[in-house]
Image (cartoon, rainbow, N blue to C red; front, top):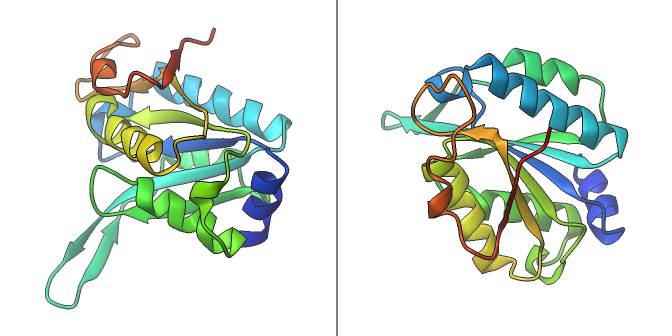
Length: 180
């Protein structure tokens, strides 16, 4: 698992980062969002990009047992058998350090030194976890191009249609695109 990101990063191949697309978050459930995230996953797979699923995990009890609800099954089925996909867990809104740690583990060096082929971001919640993770990545990986796919993201509310709500919380150096 770790070798694939090393190959991708050192060869300047992009990564698709799928943030918190877990059924427990109502904002991850609209059919338009699952359809648009699926489209991004298919596109990334066609181009042999790395795909990282970032999942919100919470620690419970004295023993520190982690409780995680997996990413939507429909999305995980898309990458079944795809060798360039992995899951990373985080305990707060900002998952940038966990993403960087995964990259560091794959390369055996400091992921911050790599601009790579960039990171394309989809998922929920735009004004919380997506914004915090993206903003964190821009601080620790300043030379990496980061693109947020606006219509493959959603905010706290169950929107019938894609919404720009929360996008104003994302660092101004990050491109926000709409893909049809």
